[in-house]
Amino acid sequence: MTALMQSETLIVFVQTGVLFLFVKSILRDWGTFSYLDTGYALAVIMISRWIFDSIGTYASMPILLMVMLYAWRRTRSLSESFLIGLQVGIWSIVIDHVSDLIVYALKFDGGYLLTFTSLQLLSLVILNVILMNTHVKSTFNRPSLNRVTGVLLLVIYLYIIVSEGLNDELRLVASNLVVLLVVIGLAVALYDEYRITIRAKYQVQQQQAQIKNDTRYMNEIEVHYNELRNFRHDYQNMMLSISEYLKTDDLTGLQEYYQENIAPVTKRVADEQYNLEDLSRVKVKSVKSILFNKLNYAQSQGIKVHFELRQVLERVATNELDLDIALGIILDNAVEAVVGNYHGEITSAIFQTAHSTVFLIQNNLFEQLPPLWQLKEVGYSTKGTNRGLGLNRLGTIVNRNENMILETRVLENRFVQRLTVAREEV
Image (cartoon, rainbow, N blue to C red; front, top):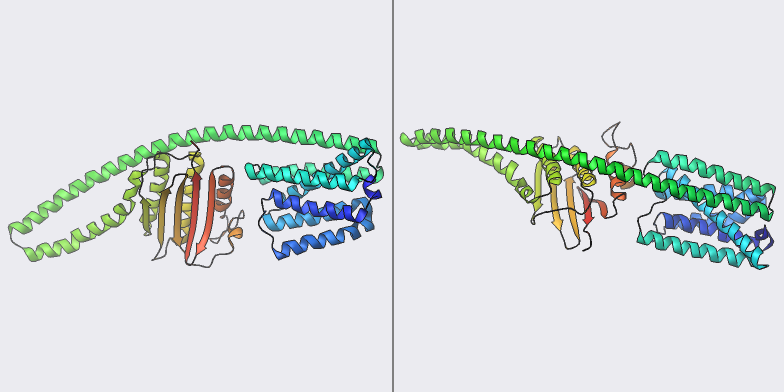
């Protein structure tokens, strides 16, 4: 290929360096340049020429493995790092082939390096513009799809590398380019079909969940009505008892009766009801239902609960089903973290601004937590085996909703999760 007839060292450096830039762009990791990552990338770039001199055309394979290792350090997912590495590797080959064809067509002898570098930088700029203005992802939410796609891309990549090692005629370059473009087109079509199917599936799930939430809401109303009837009955009996003490002027007995029977009930009602009275301002029935059920359950487990909402919440500008699931996961984790502890406490609130609705949930901590990225891995849990799916699923839900942002922090002895839902532009 004409690439080997020009400044080979500089070409290999450019090819290797651009691979790392593409990985950082795909991961939307523009603002993070740790010393370790930067040193690793520079080391790979520096030894890439030696690798190329040792095994020739096949040098791209070990270099690509090192790029995948770099991606894994950022994602902590083998399937995602494998897929991302193959994507940037194959794209580099596409740019290489296009550069060859341009140089050949224009008779631009000695212009491969300039052409290749220009096309790489141009594609890098276009990629960043797309990523900064959309929520397009290079990987699927399901690891199984990532693995299948990665295997297909690996077959294509190995075919190109092996075939170019045997023959580098222009005809072979052109045929490889056609194969790549066809595969890219098929991948885009399959992804679009998958996206449409998933959207339809979630619409059906949302309708089913809405019916379920409406039913649960009506059941809650019935429960509250029965509680009110029981309270009225108890209230009448309590008044009759008080009247007997008053009729006999037994103030000492009345005082003892009040301390032993009325005062504890008053405190319990205040603790269990008024802490959640702001829930009446939540007019989105599915959200109100999930909040009430989770917080009421927490109270039944002896956990101190607070909820605050100053303004009426009329609607949420996102998928209600996904929001309900996300809030359920966050609250379940909060309850699990504090249940059984005498000082267990959960504080929750909803804040509304001109541009967003913020759901804030925090609980106190009673143990040292591992790094946050480890908590989000599938299967990891501080509570034993067969757990740890919540935070990973929560991240998946947030990622598929463009107007959702999740912030997770540990502040002193409190675990805080802030779920922001951006409002639709008017």
